Figure (cartoon, helix red, strand yellow):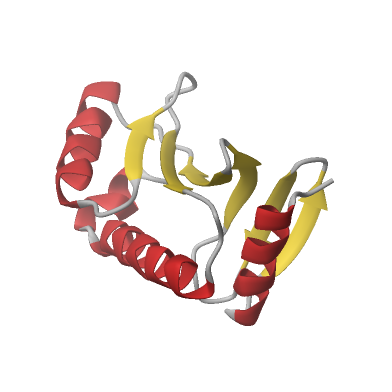
Length: 125
């Protein structure tokens, strides 16, 4: 079951061309040309999370994450407990069309910057 803010964010993502698949409280958002991610309601807002597997040495991956975090606007990049590369961004409620559009534009900028990094192809699967 989704909450109002999750439904509103989902409708906005569908407007952007995302396809949504609901599993319990988590929604998977997929797109042909933009990065796929999952989102769920938490703390009165919505958490958006994307990830990649990585077989890179942890120290090298952490250096990469530190560099990305330094330049990120709304995204927190991290290495999780399974040594996967993870991206998280929190949109605080309440939902407004303009507020979410601004957040999503910054999110896409952060994630496109990641994909433009030459090391991304080498470190992330």
